[in-house]
Length: 350
Length: 279
Image (cartoon, rainbow over all chains, first blue to last red):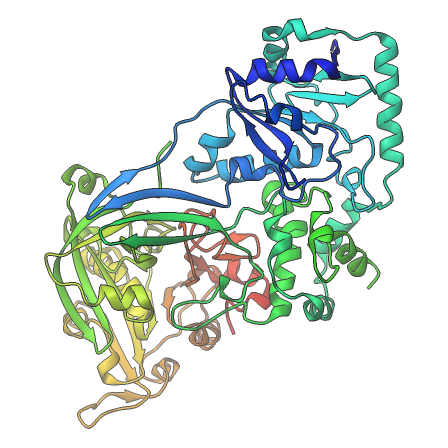
């Protein structure tokens, strides 16, 4: 497939132009210096200068755009229910890292299976993923082990693509690969911003990708890990040891690109109220506690087992792949230094 | 795509007090077209809510053969269920569903049926019992073994007698703590094994009760010749969405709300031991 070039000094203009027609989200540095996926409103002259496509790490994964931490399911006034579901609409996540893109694709499949979750799908299905690959992965990344980065590979099928477009940073410009029909259409609409890539550009990009992959420090044999989790009963004492360190804050799950558990609750003032859903975490003691007081996962060690086996065993059994995308956020965000990569190593060396 | 999260208003037609902390509600959906398309099978559950308070999963206790209404039995256990207990006939309640898989009564044709229930475990079985008795000729013998802590805590007491009078149908009751008037069996539900012939290699058993009861009942059934694929249990877990998304009811790779709540013992054996499906 023909690749294109996008000059970095064209990015602002491209984004301004795209923002006029699309709901466009980009990594934008806020006034506190934190980079988050933020909507770039039409002709926003302030945020346009705060786009940071070369970010190394996002604390909150872009899943928050398609699966907000808190969302209203409906409102009610007295006995009347007022629907708040938003219709499907097109949006772009511009600058999403490969692991996070894979996380969203994983969640798409989860929310599509059996009963369809219309709130999630209306947000996610028409979302264009413009991926920026990682030239310099962090020490905590292990995407190459789970095949979610540092760059994605074109699947060979434009209907089942992992990305719509993928950008590789070549210094002053990006090499742009097309992954899907939607990506192809995007390029043709905004053709004036793109030029044809030369063979040299493609070779340079290949070298950058190769070096990025080689620079990753954590290497895990994920097939072996999944086999271990699926075939063996991991001894409970390993989880109990993790449980002793874990403070059960749920942070690792909130920042996980594939965690999708939620709670549903009501709020009411006088006759007016809302039913919401918000992120929940399986490590919380109340997560499985029934009204009678009975709790099948009362002990911390059992909850620790659930948290890791869900990703490495049950996700594999139901979705056909590891639920961990190797982003390393659980390790980075953990106050007591537990992370998926470490847990895997502990299990393998046991 | 259907919006599964929007509940439908229903009106409480009648309320029956079952036990000191348990009531059965009969409700009819306000929207008649919706009511006509609300098809369920016994064993399935609904999400019942009071707007502004919350929502909880409750088993359907009625059988669709009874008419265009729904019945469900609620024990006042938490904040929402205590508030449901304060509602009166004519009040509005919100319902969505039905969810989960039913008891496979179609698999039980011409077979002997055994219902084993403990305490508030009878309501989820009651719809299947009613359906089976309605087509009595389709099944072999029917045995209903039901235990509760005290005689006061037996649900559907007014129906137990009429079930017992159906042809080749026997209802056996037991309580842990009898009162002065109790003339029946005393002991846990498995002590009823001495009261009737339970040996059966082709019988179908439907079991519902507290988790602690499952192990003893399943052991007894297996010892009586029941095949593990012919023993059906209905599981209870904390649930929020009812459609396999929120995660709360997961056990291993299964979701109780969509893969269950009715499971045969063969598949329950495959679930992780640490999840304590069966003690």
